[in-house]
Length: 461
View (cartoon, one colour):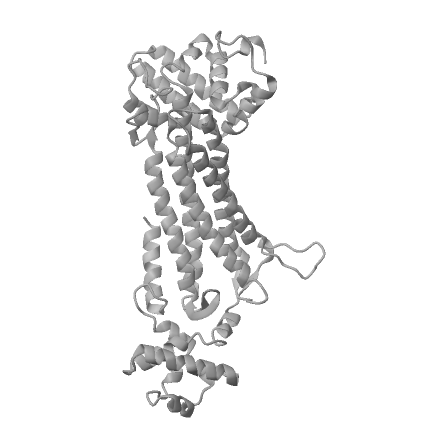
């Protein structure tokens, strides 16, 4: 760096080149450039509106900022490390375009409130994009579910066979997780959409600015009531990372199930070639790379959340350089969530196929209808706990004999308890076991069809 690139006359020498590189954020905060330009245009319009600069100066600055936007989009403006950050890069280029009036763009503003504004504008936009991708993901879940209301799949607790389910009911569980994610992002967005612009470095400004004016121009819902809080708050970013982490939790849970389902041990789904890879030495392999990568990338987002929490936990008011470290993790989390949602949506839509014959067979190979035997007796006056103990003994006897419950003869059933009748076989058939669970929110076919209608209504909101 040259003598002329000193911070100000207060400094006698420029930064050491290595320190300049270490200090610079232009390598990643260039992602904020369009938001910086938009925020700066609003700030300039406010300066003209309040008479701090002339209307002619305001028009000139707005036009210059718009020229930088076009130059950036056309890849004619690509600042490097000597610019330090995107804000300085824009201001320097603006002065080159419009002359000394460009030096007025930073009147009544600090980089502290400027970067806070840019980050909020960026995140507000990204949240809307992620919400749109969540809707795409939910839509694919519903499309598959609507075709598989009466397709049965084993249900598990502790990864042990528990009770059979409608496949649609299983997929609707992930729809509901995604719905909470969608709603949670909306809640986070309300706190993202508060303007710190005009808070200055930490204490406000002596100029007669109108913070509500800039907030309105930028479509913020409100402004920070305390300037110290406005420049140092990163709660909104932490909240977003929490929401992003939960999105990744839900995607990772589904990814793990797809990985299990595609294994030979389960064999519930077949991976299509468009969403699977092979082995470099084992020609028979077809690997579930998409869900494995989603499962792996989940840890990245968790890590960024933890990092920002640790950054914030010991910071005194107000702004500290540590806060430069909020961006790379935030940007990476946004990109990771968007890429993972897109990949899982494609995987569901065109990358796997449920093996319905295998699923139909799977629900007949276990004792997941044992609870229904106990319910059968309880419905005929036998206390449930007594029925539960009796069925436990039946299961043990069947296991010792290499039988399933459906293999018992009516005579054997009636020897166990006189309440059993010929309708026991229908009661414990997998289809009836599922259909009978018709309580609200249950897996019964009637309830699942109602849930699908309700889900489509939620999607329309």
